[in-house]
Length: 310
Image (cartoon, rainbow, N blue to C red; front, side):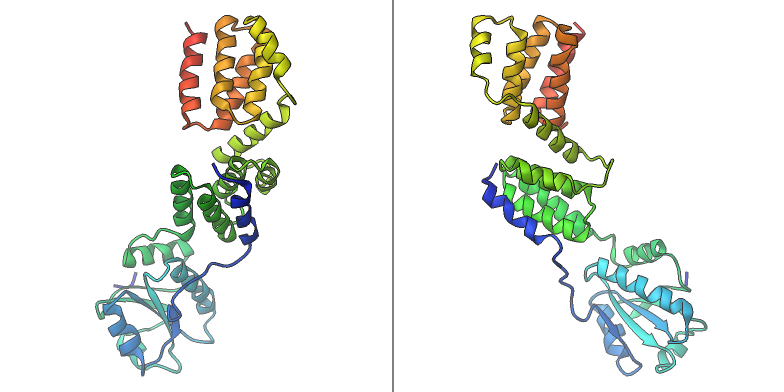
């Protein structure tokens, strides 16, 4: 056995970063004894699996294993419980279970021991041990990421921002959360806050949402202050590619990526090589800003390939 939303609606989550969201059962980890063993371990394991850590104050490896066990049990979010038993003070059940060296860990389910191991094993082995006992657990970070993405798909930008901010409390360097939260602020029209969040990412770090936000910010920064003159020139001469490019940049800077892409594709149809491929370069930035799964990107890439390779 042993072995789209107003800025004000998405600004609030920034204040959440750094707070704690731990909400675990108070008896998830407890000190046990011979007197309470039947209730804490045997009977409790009929409701959910219980891990028993036999240890002693003088045991060096116990001091290494104990914190790792507690961390893994907390990560399982209540799927299993941990009972710690000092064998010097409580030798009865340690003797009955033939504990010969410590640390020794037993897993109980349905009132009986079902698995166990001896020694201070690596964290990865502890996780495997718990997963086998309780089934693989979805981490809180994964759950929050799923909630955020579902909220975005439903058009709830504020809800997505809330979930991304909570995820950043747990994992401050999570690129998906940084990129996602920055995208929420950008969708709310707060480019300054979006950049602030994007800059939280470690230097050189890459993530699809993060790159998308950075591309969108670059489009906004390079957009002309106004485009009325370019629109007049384009109306007067549809072959004025410079005017069309300026119109496209203005549209992209305002977040109208589909309209901007249509203008750039029109430049490519009329002159693929104009201005050393300036239209194609701008179009690729728009695809990056829109994201690989967007219709702007998917349809735009197909149309661009059809034009360039026809």
